[in-house]
Every structure is written in C-alpha cells, then in structure tokens.
Length: 182
Length: 107
Image 1 (cartoon, rainbow over the protein chains, first blue to last red):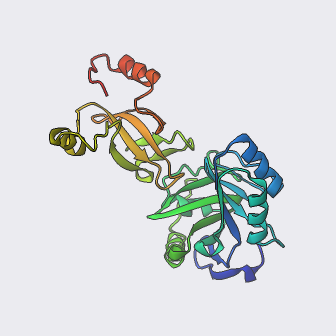
Image 2: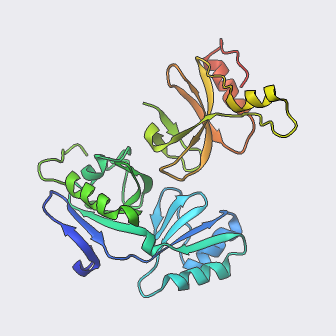
C-alpha cells in the first residue's frame, strides 16, 4: 500500500481497511485491436497489451477494444495520450479520465469477502488471483477491480458515485459481518 | 438463475450483469412498407414457449451486444454468439436440434 497521504478518506473501523485514493492519473484508450494497433500500443507504453480480463504493468483490459492505462509515476496523462496518438495509425480515442474515476483500496485478509457481498463473481482464491481484472457490478454500481496482492484489492468506479461507494464498502466491511467462506 | 457467457470477453456472468435486448434477428422494414408489415416489425414478437433467440448486452462488463440462444422454460443456455450476424450459426442450430429433436421453429 502506498503512502497514507495518497488517500483522501480512510476507514479502519471494520475488518477490512477501506481507503479512497486521491486523484489517480489514468487514461482510457479505445481502438480496434488489430495487430498493428497492438504493436503501436506496445511501442507507446513500453508494455504489451494485456490478455483479456487481466491487468499487467498498469494496463488493464476493459473490453476487446478498450484499455485503462494507469499513468506511470513521473509522467502526465497528456504525455501518454501524445505517445498513443503518435503511434497508433488507425481510428482511436485516448482520453484523460483521471477526474472521472474514483479509486479505492481494500486491505485485509478478508478483502475478498467484502466484494463477494455485492459482486456476482467467483472470488475464491483459485478463481480470482492477483493479475486478474474484472468489470462487473458491486451492489448497483458499475465497477472494475483487481488484486494487488492476496490481501489487497484496488477498485475503480465512476467519480460521481465515490461517496456512495465508500459508504457501501465501509458498511460491507463492518466487524463480525464477514464470513470466512473464501 | 441465468448464467450467460459473453462471447466478447469470455466472462461467465450472472443475469444481473447483463441486460436483455429483446428478440434477435428481426428483419427491419421501413420506408415504403405496408402498415401491416411495419406493425408486425414494430410490435409482434414470437414469444415461444421453448427455444428463444435474444439480444443481450454485457452492460456491467465490456459493454458489448451479443446474441444468446436459450430455453424460456428451463433457462438452459445453448450458446451465445456474435452480434455481427443476421442468423444463428449453423453449429448452434445443430446443437439445439440434437438436444431438442422436437424443436421445429425457424428462428
């Protein structure tokens, strides 16, 4: 987990620590996933396009033609967008969505159990492992999440829902409310 | 519970992760058609008791539209396939016929 200053809200009252991160720079990229385009993305980002439903080196697979790129430390979204635009020679769209997303960190041994309360996903340690990436719903909110480590989950949702999402997660993480199924 | 596999992202998701888009493979009629034809296209749906072909959208996932063939009675899903087609793939039809020899309807 990164520096405490990188969180705008933290709640440690439950069994799992829930924290809302401050603005996380990220870029959404949409393009037809042809071979030349995938090669161009690799040249622009320095990392290969991730396999379906995975996240690797800060690049997440959102859909067959969509990726979410976490801007590496020391770089700006504009620089990443500039490199993508220069490399990809096909219709494409790269947008700075840093202000449109909220990012949460769940930390604790039962982090899986918190998500399992609201997401229709098999979150058992054999089915969902670090490196996997899943877009789904949590309660009624469209989210995407992945595991940084066995006890740490990062979750992304629309910024307009961040307070609702934070309260939902804090409520779901309450003490003595988490079973030990997973 | 209905479990659908999105053909675009490969996720086997539960029904609430998707959104139903109604009957699949409608033949569109527009300008120049008779009122009766347009009424049929606009309002009349087959709604059979048995095999149905439907449009679905992976609304909480990759956001793509796709097609699904399932049984409206048992909720058995025979398969899902790409949205970029005007008729079900032949191997899916063969699979349904093998499982339901009495099935007559043409999609």
